[in-house]
Image (cartoon, chains in turn cyan, red):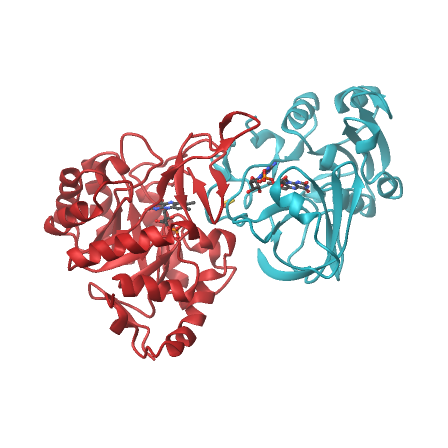
Amino acid sequence: MPQASRYKVISNREVASQTWQMRLEGDTSAFSRGGQFVDVAVCGHFLRRPFAVREWDDTGFDILYKVVGHGTEEMTSMQAGTVLDILTGLGNGFDASRCKASALVVSGGLGASPVFSLVKELVAGGRSVTVVMGYNTADDILLFDEYKASGADIHISTLDGSKGVKGFVTDVIDTLQGNWDYFYTCGPKVMMKAVCEKLEIPGEASLEERMGCGCGICYGCTCHTAKGPKRVCADGPVFRKEDIIW
Amino acid sequence: MVTEVNLCGIRLKNPVIPASGTFGFGTEMAGMYDLNVLGGISLKGTTKNDRYGNECPRIAECPEGMINSVGLQNPGIDALLEEKVPALRKIFGGAIIANISGFSVEEYVHCCEKASKSPEIDILEVNISCPNVHGGGMAFGTSATAAAEVTAAVKAVSRKPVFIKLSPNVTDIVEIARACENAGADGLTLINTILGMRIDIARRKPVVANRYGGFSGRAIFPIALRMVNQVASACSIPIMGCGGVSCAEDVIEMMMAGATAVQVGAENLRNPMVCKQIVEELPQVMNKYGISDINEIIKAV
Ligand SMILES: Cc1cc2nc3c(=O)[nH]c(=O)nc-3n(C[C@H](O)[C@H](O)[C@H](O)COP(=O)(O)OP(=O)(O)OC[C@H]3O[C@@H](n4cnc5c(N)ncnc54)[C@H](O)[C@@H]3O)c2cc1C
Ligand SMILES: Cc1cc2nc3c(=O)[nH]c(=O)nc-3n(C[C@H](O)[C@H](O)[C@H](O)COP(=O)(O)O)c2cc1C
Ligand code: FES
């Protein structure tokens, strides 16, 4: 259930080119799954800004955000101690229970953030987990040490070949031999579409849309699915492969 | 302190009503707070058949406001009456306002006749002002003759109070309001959104896929207030004032301008708790301005 609360900025720093990580302290009782998101009220902007939760614990959570416009630019100037009005517990998140023994997790760019807690949950649940992360270039790589420490098998592709396999995530998948039974993906739409079309196993992908409310009341974020119109914010953002109409 | 108001015989415990399209079918909000604090709820706009609405993006941010081009996504009148309204009635004792849209006079009549028979619905709000659909909606709200025709037709089949929801996208809103009153409308809701546009500079394309959309939020409050005041001066039927309301003071202003009840729209999207907060603040604000019965301020200006 969505919940509106106040959170205190604990830290806010640039962790990769134009990408920042913000740690917030406050009530996390509304969080239940990796892949859920929060909606941050940014002073001076009418609508809230949605961001996926990277990880949370009893005292707070953190997000990774890319500076793309006015709101995220404003966020970079928020100092430790700033208090923010945030809606939490939004969206369905990934369903780790759908993976029986072996998972393939594929992220593109900032998509590495929302799948992070999922990967930890899968590993903790005894599944073998392969993670393929795609980036444009080595400078964009996020959370490398955190992923290395997660116990999952990590692979990287970069478009310019500055690190890992040169090319797309799908090029990396071609080189891997896994008997995965389920996959999870988050990243640019074209990447997720290619992953869903390539893999024969079942899986799920996290979609993105411009949002009004972020909590299911305005129908501003609707997408077509095999099960009819669905709200990305409240029925998603994670949808099963067979339900997504690309 | 009296906050109860009366809309054509329907008693609302207070004048605060979430506006159509900004509060879903009510049940979506049930987890956030007890809806029974609200005077009423205006449900999402409904048409005869189910509609997907417009393609996304449907939302564009603006300074102190937003543009939406949802385009009347809804499950159709039968699903509204069979599923949505009964589900809301189970958890909500206040006034349920069905918001009806259409593409022809026959469609408005069909939906109003059905909705009017629902024991759970208290008021019909006929939206002749949706800027987001072609060949319907706003076309009826921008001509006095067409507005009067829809009003007379739906009144003929409705046993519940009928409020006609007016568009601000007209030269003279008073002329349209008068036409509705003369055609038998029990009340008026105003205003719907103002037709607007944003452009994504990098893509050289409109931000919303439907090109134009309805602009609303705090920025339109002065326009809404002015229109409510003009219509209240010219008509004698009750008004639900709507447009840019974001706090208890705005509710007071809207009522002083001429509204009997006040709807809160886009503000729910940025702050889903806002209607509850307004209801809670209202007695304090009334106290501050020496208002003991909220009815005494209606049309005070
Ligand atoms: C469910 C979900 C999860 C997200 N998770 C993350 C994340 O973990 N990290 C991250 O960096 N970004 C994430 N995004 C994208 C992020 O919300 C946008 O980058 C951000 O809102 C841009 O704000 P701005 O003010 O800087 O941009 P502006 O362009 O100035 O914003 C104008 C308006 O457009 C909206 N908008 C702009 N770009 C997007 C977008 N790509 N998606 C949705 N709305 C957009 C803004 O929210 C705002 O309402 C997520 C989006 C969604 C829908
Ligand atoms: C997302 C959204 C959806 C809306 N959908 C409807 C609708 O279905 N029917 C209707 O009569 N008005 C609809 N409206 C208009 C509002 O009910 C209200 O008249 C308008 O937004 C002005 O109020 P505001 O400035 O408080 O938002 C919608 C507005 C928004 C923002
Ligand atoms: S953003 Fe409002 S319903 Fe999804």
